Length: 354
Image 1 (cartoon, helix red, strand yellow):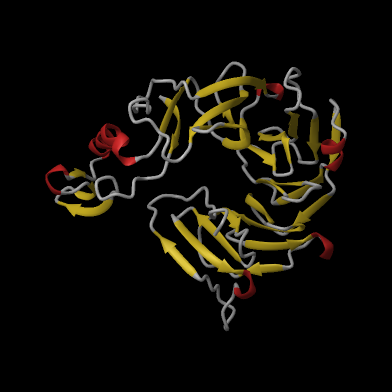
Image 2 (tube, rainbow, N blue to C red; image 1 turned 90 degrees about the vertical axis):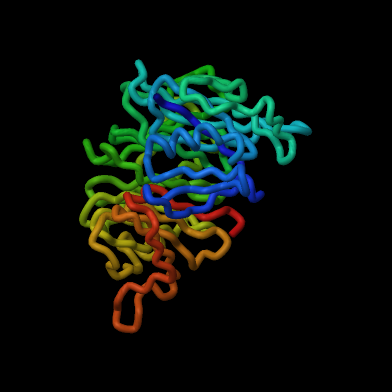
């Protein structure tokens, strides 16, 4: 089955907060107290069924939306409206395997704190659709290709950027959804360079730029200011800059929180690179290698722009201070090496306010 889930905060009371314990069957989650205590064992099937049964106790809110087709990517959009008890927020997700493949624009009705009605709260059901999710429009993707990643611009929320296996990126102007065709095309990648690639980011300033990495180890940057100020269908925007430094696939890129000139990247060559467009097309700083596996993701802290976090194929997450990415002998010097996951980490992110 394919489903889209929206989970509210995990309950902080002793009855609803899960903690890890050990049982004869292996690791388990335990929540509750006294006679009502429950245990979820390490058995995957039993753990899933227990979680499903008690999901209403674990979360303050649960929205369960069954999908006809798998969705490889999801993105939050702008707040559409505010009501006393709830808000309506735009969401975007892609459909893979549909005929044709498409990007779905929908609205999600989200209850505000202390306004969730337990009686009306969605019960977890793999095949159920929620009345809290309403589809606005489906955008057919160019050449019916599958979309790998979608993004919005912080200061141009009417623009939706999609990256697929094609060698172009596509931008839709959502101010007018009556025309399902893309408003603009971002060109510059070589044929086949974007297959199964997810490296995409947009800057946070008022004149937004777009970054995209590819399988050839290149990073391209586009200035989409004209698309923001004067959108019209059929625009073809060529890459403004091209950066070289990776020797393998670029897995993720991330703009500096307050600068469209600086960014960082990670790749399958196990490198974390820092770039500054004002100083050329080569990296200005290279973090020493600290692992022998692919680096999948990176995120820059918006509250403290010296802090970054990465995730790798071995399940590790590492926090770095860019002022001291290397130790006194030139070795890698992460502030906090965190190894909790058993499988690859594909996405990391900081809380916006911390």
